[in-house]
Length: 141
Length: 421
Image (cartoon, rainbow over all chains, first blue to last red; front, side, top):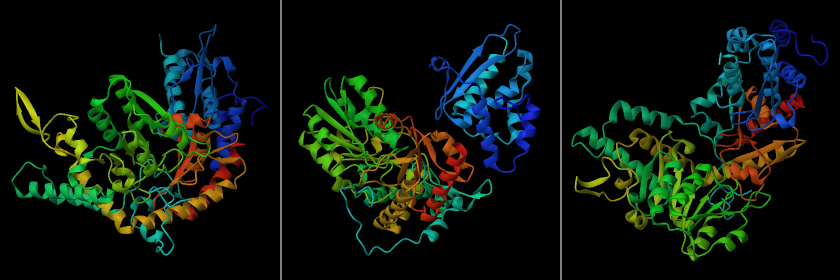
């Protein structure tokens, strides 16, 4: 498993960790634990402007500057499961250039994790809107 | 705990034959299915009720054997469809104990019914007139009145609620003035389950000369509703929340009021005579039913209302009150869980929050266990705000909900909270 306090190094490690769990309860416990490792946004960054449109939970997303032109961002949510999903996205997009980030297939990865319902089932939830917004971050401006 | 939305503490009385819930459940095909390997536990009836076979079959038969446009042809099928459509109107009339069948207007649902009244009846409002709403209203019974207030210069006044979610009748009495022209009230709160004392509140409104519209979307499903007894002027409900199809609903309005109201939408069927010099309008209800209506929906709704009436609406109310009381007891025992809305008179809804747990997280983990609940503000943001919340988890009951299902809910909540904490 991962070093204490750190997210898995890459998406394959994350996937392997998920495969250790049989039941939904352990999978969710792990997901929530990932969320606890997420670097939280400062309260002053949780502004209306940084909020992603959503209905049931609040999600904030902040783009960071990166001198090497990679996609860098931080996200946070008031819901524990959504925070875990954001942590999964952090792992998935880690160290990616914009061009690489555009190639990331979030849906396929979430299907492999067995978490696709969080993308598909409620298009009004903040997490779905967040993935859409991340994709716009990676698009050439 | 009272027995349903008739309100004012009406007790269904002992000696009512209990319903055979298993026999009722067997009539709902969807309740036989499973979700991710778990039996479905459907606790979202307040959002939309499931449909019994009788309704599904009636719609199928209508399209297979009886369909044509209504009120238009001389041919056999048109006459048959018309008679099925008008029969549904008479069923709705009986269902509400409305004096006249022509006071029943078919609409798409509660929202359209309220928009119709706000648009049409609302044309008589003048600057400074007052529209009185309660804190518990669904957005559908707020926004149409806000639009009307913007158009007319009328002012909206809001009745506060007590900490248990019951209406502050004293405050209501003191904010009612002769300037009040409309009091629009939810009969049963979708967010908290509070049953409003409509009869009493309507009587108070009458004393100052205000009209009363009741949003019955959550009330008709849980027990008897009698518009004559309630003393209101308009009553609205949606078909899909009372075991009928989506896209159809009922507006009842007092005949003399509907008679004076201008059309809401223009189109076929709502006119008496059309010329480019000007048109004259048909009498109600046709005046308010422009265009080809949702005939199959009306037929299905009629069957749903008869189906519910045949169960015995007092028995339904008594049965649901028992199940609700069981759920209230169970949830009250869960550590850190707080029920939101604990009025003495409640129907159909268990709304709650758990300390340190986001409602969406809880609902997600309940869904993993096959338990369907709703989370969020329930389209009643002012009600949520009153309790300092952005949302709750809501388990809502139908006639098919059993005590055993609420046992599973309580265990499911405990399981979810263990994971989340």
